[in-house]
Amino acid sequence: MRTRNTRSQKPGAKSQRIRAFYWLLASGSWLLLPALLPSCKREKREFQVPPPDADVIYKLSTTDFQAGGSTTQPAGYQGFVHNNYDENAYALTQGQQLFHQFNCSGCHANGGGGMGPPLMDDKWIYGDRPEQIFATIVEGRPNGMPSWRNRIPDYEVWQITAYVRSLSGLTNPNASGNRDDHMKAQTPPASMDPQHPRQSFMPPGSESTP
Amino acid sequence: MILANAQNALAPAGPQAQSIGSLWWMFHWIFWAIWIAVVVCMFIAIFKNRTPQDHPLQPEVKPDPAGEKRVGVVISILTGITVVILFVLLISDFVVGRKLFAMSKEDNQREIKITGQQWFWTAEYEDATASNIFTTANEFHIPVGVPIKFYLTSTDVIHSFWVPELHGKKDLIPGHDTQIWLKADKPGRYDGQCAEFCGHQHAKMRFAIIAEDADTFKKWCETQRAPARQPTTNEQIRGQQVFLNTTCITCHTIGGTKAGGRVGPPLTHVGGNQTIAANSVPNDEEHLREWINNPHQFKPGVRMPMNNLPDEDLKALAAYLHSLE
Image 1 (cartoon, each protein chain N blue to C red):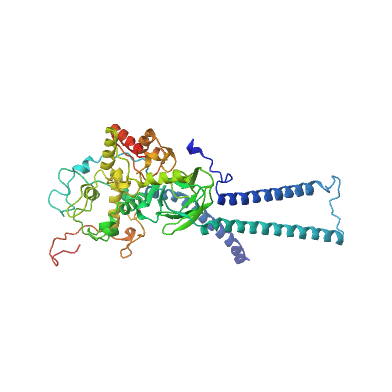
Image 2: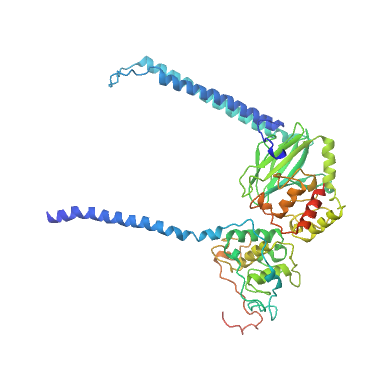
């Protein structure tokens, strides 16, 4: 009798406990919803972009030392520029579209390099920082890179800058493209390791492991 | 007002739209007749043989073979009529479909290659002589009574080409040519529209087809082929300098100058158009100025950037563009 009683009571208590567990789970998942909010930043689209003050960038020189010293902070300028577009998927795709429309591919071949240097490896002649790439685009560089100053609006240059950095995995992987329309040889920007510059002028063999 | 044209598919101005319109009217009247018949039957069912208030709750169930047979015959006849109606609609639909493509076999077709992109249209007028080919944007003139063959394609996403007064819709697929034939029977301005959602400014991705007699069309073609008019006044000369030395030159073409960008619509003869911004803003100097200064006030999200030019430069630029007839 006793065993029967305990048996008949158990399932009821158990199902109640299961119900309480599910209830907790359901209410808990509601609490987790705000965790989705940061993804809004990825999708943010700004249309009426006020013309930015680009004076800082226009005064900027690539480096105070030499071409190739890409991570050195330029003289007279405190702190690096943070390009918000590095975290914005819309800006990155706009940059990609502009990259092709303004025929950057003519020399850089979808980032793989041709007449111009490749943009998806870890070799940066004039630096990998956003402001350095921005300066390269607006100022132009020797041996063929034209100056785009006054030819492309500043915010579009920032979008192209973000896209160029995404090619070597330097932008936020949550915003970078998951696949590329062209280059299949390379891992997609969203899942590749950031290609920060190495000291490429060292003789082979003397390079320390990164 | 040019921007408020009816875009009425039931006011056909060409043979294809005529066929589509007559098919529409046939469907319209047949469906009216069916609807009225259904409503009449419904009311008969409601009011005929109403159960009286003091009727006993138990139904009387008596076999009635004659009545059942009658009901069976009526239902069979109605089903037969439905099938016949469906076949009539199917066959007339098929016949209209054949008619729409009959024009593809006509002679003396004129070929125009339309490219849709976010959010405007360009047209390349084909010609056997290569130097006679020209490109224009958003306002397309055609001769009346001549069959036109449009090749449609897109550079970014799927769009759809629709001039309700002349024809039905046809999609523009990136990397693939589709074709549509149409003819305008009478001169006039027929507004067209992108009919496949394609992004922010899909609703204002408009264009116009302007049908005119052969002579006017020939003259228009000659104007379009010519390089852009040289600036004459000091203001226009300054405007041209502004155009060639700012961001404009990166995206737009003005024939006869060094501006050869192909990202935005060509502006070689933009002054001759009645509208700007893909047939959605009237074309005058004031609107041009406001458009260049901040295109997003008319079309939020448009690909053209805001341009922070000094007032005088902006004024000169608008005057120059408006002079390009």
